[in-house]
Length: 466
Image (cartoon, rainbow, N blue to C red; front, side):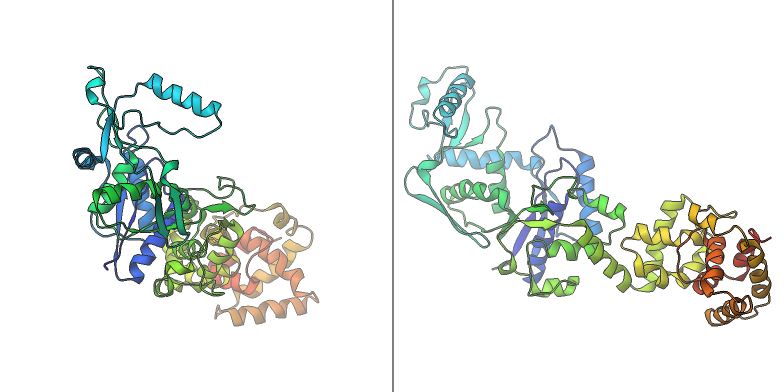
């Protein structure tokens, strides 16, 4: 069987983190089996669907590195096809026109509420003669669902799900204005797109039962269903913005790498032994639905950041420098000079060791770009008082005489000055760090001098000499 999956978001907002994981699982499953993932935009809710949201979904998937085959499909554009299938069901006697008035439906709702049960349409027009309908009434079309037996879905994650047909009512397929309902549109689209596996959140599990009935009455092949557990916050509560239920673009702005987010989302509800660091090629090789659990996964931002720090450290130096430069341009609000760009490859390996995100990495690299006089942190300013200016003058003198500006020579010179001054190295390194970076923490002072180069280092030290 050819494997065809689909990702089918509603364009009512950005690509949120739960949708991104659903897209990832569909993409990996298709890749693992040599199949295809299709993209369908479920834009039938015209009041809430926006072009901006469609664009955000496309951009979010591209940023994550999840491609799809063919052109994206608009569900709204297929409304005529959905209506055609409803008419086929009607002609075959598997659907009927219902002329219930809003008042009658309201009365059913009140009765159900009074009896403490959920609302179910009572089927009053199921076998009634349409000739009894008011002449000016616009009917809906309802599915003539089976009333005996059970509907069964063999879910690849949740197992066998069985619902007695007596517990289900005849759902609406076409509204009175002729527009299709979500339940009908999804089934028709999945059939026409030849979708073999429907992988989606388990909040759709009850929908699968009703959708199975349409497949059966149309005598269509039923796709295989796989309903994956939802994502909760770290505290086990339903995911919200305070837990990290943000659009994918927000994680890009936070400085999360696409590869890290893919790895993290993969491990939310899926596992392969004790493996935690799983690159994309390995994920494609390993991913299958038998690794998906049934319990809700918990989203934990610190864990994501920790994973992201691993990917930052493991990234190719040239690629990381390019990303760092892009982030610094955003942070600084200006292009970088050639001299500034040249400093990044010298510094990036030292800077990346404690950076959890690209934003943190750019912040740590900020001192490389600061214009003189440097902005000073309060603690750094406190290190430039007392004897510090005189000490910096002597440091400036010995550093001016250095002919071969490298870490080894700089280490020898600064250590030699500390010994000559009968100081512990820290007593010299601290004011130097403050003068060179405007901060009280940075990479090692010998590295900082090397990163900045001799002219810039001497100029910065000179700003604070006696």
